[in-house]
Length: 270
Image (cartoon, rainbow, N blue to C red; front, side, top):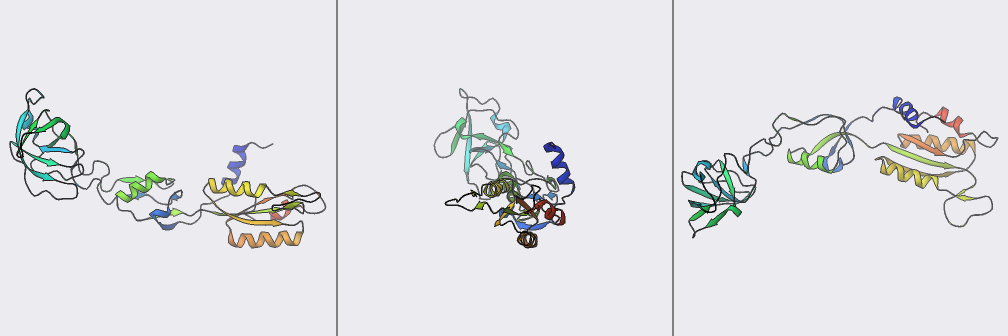
């Protein structure tokens, strides 16, 4: 018996990846990248806040605590998706929502849970902020020109999210190989009642499932009877529409049919 690693290595040594194709990002799940993906954009594209709170100058909060809060004048509110229209000066704070751009003049954010409003125009800050606190800098996740994913990466759901974040709508990938599956044998039936000497074909449904789970596109080509001409024709037709072919049955040395001889004459048949 040949061990699995030896068999796998022998098969892979004779198999080349399919030529690359460009596909929509939504269709790339489970496929392998055929080229490097380099970001043309920074992520995030601008400095923004990671928390709901108040954008302010960290120096204005020196010594602030719950027992001795700092009073700052509130100069407005900035929601995510809006552009700042004010500059934060000394003694001021801007109410800001998660994801909103940092306004000019501000260099830190104090989360709302560490503040208390005193009327409409004043906020009591109970925390001494440090420079850059709760601020996501432009390019903090991905920088322009950065290699995001290398060729050979198997694309999962998280990869698609990253590709969307950097504006990649189409990606070069190796397409899923189409693998045909043929069962051979006069004794096989598809389903239903079985007669004397017959059995239901179970190998082909199993192979279809294994191929699907492994990321291939299975092509179920049904049952072929033990007739050399029929088997030869079925293999020829399968290789016209498939990248590879799996056959089940006909491997014993016998007078009726020796499928291994057909395999030897048809590259891509396993």
